[in-house]
Picture 1 (cartoon, rainbow, N blue to C red):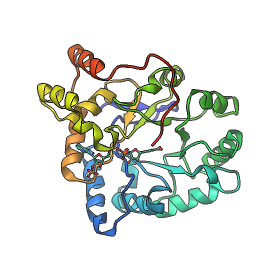
Picture 2 (picture 1 turned 45 degrees about the vertical axis):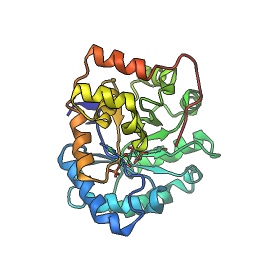
Picture 3 (picture 1 turned 135 degrees about the vertical axis):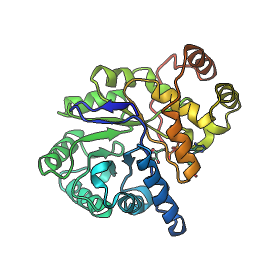
Picture 4 (picture 1 turned 90 degrees about the horizontal axis):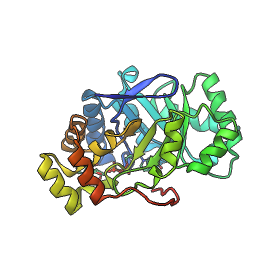
Length: 276
Ligand code: NAP
């Protein structure tokens, strides 16, 4: 699978796995662990979680899925904004590490912007890097003006901005994505199939049929067609995992791009970054 590089040169697969809603229901746990392991076997070795998801339950599911193969995966977790301070971030990080059963995170993100000054969060993140608890840090749900502020606050080593980005949520293309690309910062596209809603889109369904793939695959292939984009669909079933993996092998041609553009036009003016 094609990979995407972080500013420090580390490469990750362009297609990873999300885990929001995992760990909520003990009866579903075995299936969730299996789905993640299967996805890792298929090459989707970047796994995204957060302390927020199922109150740490998602991190525990991920911990179980990667037991014995920690070095094969790229683990991403996120801290609540209220934990992103000098005093609290180290504790939040330790708790995440313990639930994940690991000694380090590959990437640690500020989940969204809260009241802690960005400069303080940057300092707390850099301390965790120095301590070897995280290998790099980034942010999530930060719009262009927030990114400008982050950079001014000393945050130039930010590794990514994880944002809501899919065919129906193209607002980041107006200025946020160009801002990130200019600085070679990869974009992590969350809710890439719009939490399942995109697969029911009539226009996308008929384009996918013509292309000989599923609507989810076409939506993912559109994201993966763009440079510097990592998509992290969440799938808790074997079929969805397999289908999503297949999207990385779909090559879009100019006709596909034009047809998708007609159905889901690019933004013509600036709107604020949305979040789910
Ligand atoms: P998503 O990945 O767009 O959609 C997940 C939903 O789509 C699930 O119900 C899943 O069903 C279904 N699905 C997956 N593959 C499918 C396929 N091939 N065909 C049909 N349905 C399919 O939405 P998401 O979970 O919101 O986003 C992905 C990940 O991004 C999250 O899990 C999380 O890790 C991250 N995220 C981050 C933020 C943030 O603020 N940073 C916010 C939202 C999400 P099954 O589970 O039944 O397979």
